[in-house]
Image 1: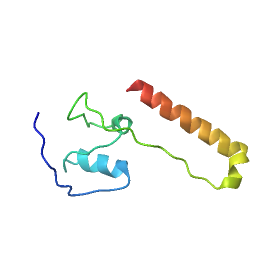
Image 2: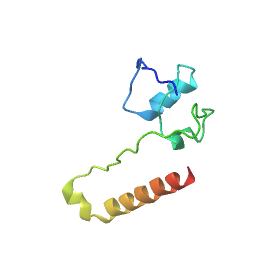
Image 3: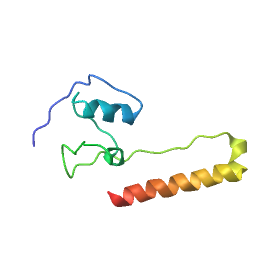
Length: 87
């Protein structure tokens, strides 16, 4: 197996920006697979996966008891689990 160091030319905290750059033929990127669902992007290394990442939802402590906050967190959890199960 061949390994080589890669130089990063661009970084962004928003994976949608990276997906758009890749779609505009600016190179390859490491983005969540679900983000490619409605694009012409395709995996460069099929079968390869990055290390798992931690997903956090940040909100004010006092809002945790609000029904709308709980509903959103439940929705987010279900949506992420659904996307992961489709991979």
